[in-house]
Length: 223
Ligand SMILES: Nc1ncnc2c1ncn2[C@@H]1O[C@H](COP(=O)(O)OP(=O)(O)OP(=O)(O)O)[C@@H](O)[C@H]1O
Ligand SMILES: [Mg+2]
Image 1 (cartoon, rainbow, N blue to C red):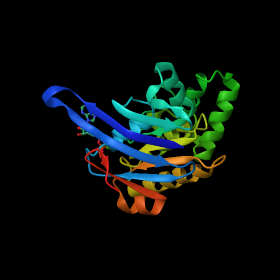
Image 2 (tube, rainbow, N blue to C red):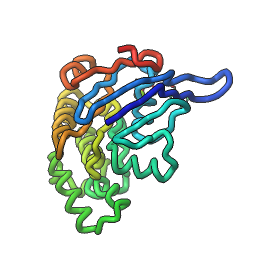
Image 3 (cartoon, protein in one colour):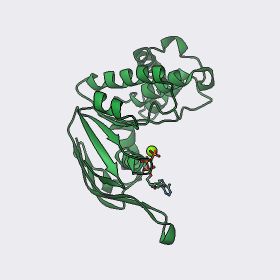
Image 4 (cartoon, helix red, strand yellow):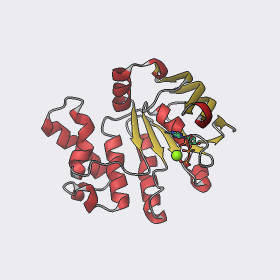
């Protein structure tokens, strides 16, 4: 599903240049659950941002589901972001002025689905994360765990083959975090093995939730 070869990414230039990824090789099969761990600054978010099509590498190649992501243009990358991957972040990144239902339905607007169909799908996704009864709440009227569940529903809106979650429970207490992780892992089996990539600081979670742990040290895969 994913084949990264010698992926490189630096930020800044001259004296302030930081090599965030210094040649990452990674292969992930369809349906695998991968945990990415490593110290703060080791390149985890940089790698997830490349896998999510939010940014392009400076070197190396990235192939996902048969497409060479590293050579897509702007439009191709936008389509990839919407159709192939779903993203969940530590800060939930919901649109503050839209209620839960409209947040979940938003990616479907760009798919050109009629409004009734968008709302029907968004409602069923909210039910999926057990928030059907909060559909008309604004993000500010939801708890952290509820906001993250809305964000998860939104990430699933276009039924992506790959779900990328970067410290999705970083802002949640442990009980709420467990519930979000359980939902996240539950989506792996939806409609034929979804690939899950979970960035976490939590070694216990990485060990218990994933098929395989990828450890980054200074922008390289150490193990
Ligand atoms: N936009 C940016 N501009 C400059 N440097 C950056 C930028 N984003 C990340 N970096 C640097 O790149 C390196 C890798 O950052 P990254 O965010 O990938 O780390 P991380 O493993 O996700 O860390 P954390 O666990 O703290 O989230 C760090 O040294 C960081 O300071
Ligand atoms: Mg990070």
